[in-house]
Amino acid sequence: IPTPSLKVTLVLPFSPSSRNIFIIGLSLYLGLAIPSWTNAELLKADNSLNTGNDDFDALVAVILSSGMIVGGSIACFLDNTLPGTDEERGLTSYRLATKAVGNKDLRKKVYSEPLMEILAKRCPILRKLPFVCNDE
Image (cartoon, rainbow, N blue to C red):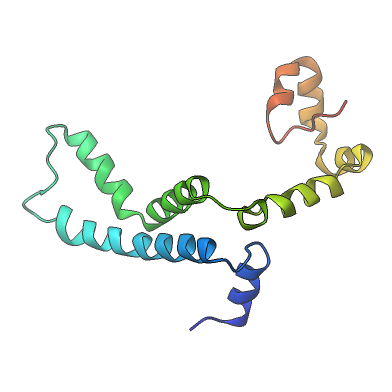
């Protein structure tokens, strides 16, 4: 049963298009179904998954048994491959949000970390990291 808070959370960043509903629905479904199938079939005592490399078998079993990895990977793949408008993909709201933080003084005040600023002055390559303020 959808709750009002879930509806508000999903409606604000995503337009209610069939593309986005399909992506969310399929990724949720497969994020629940594939780990259940993995636990029921692949992780049996007879060890159905046998590629010849035990470490690779364990890696595939862990990845397929994690619903967050499966659902997130499918959602990311579908969002980047299915065609859609910029509004459906959330790019227009992202552009508006980045323009709102276009004030460099405000950005430096919010995102600057004194220790990282000192380190970035000594080693300028650190400015490439996303959590280091890029303005000097």
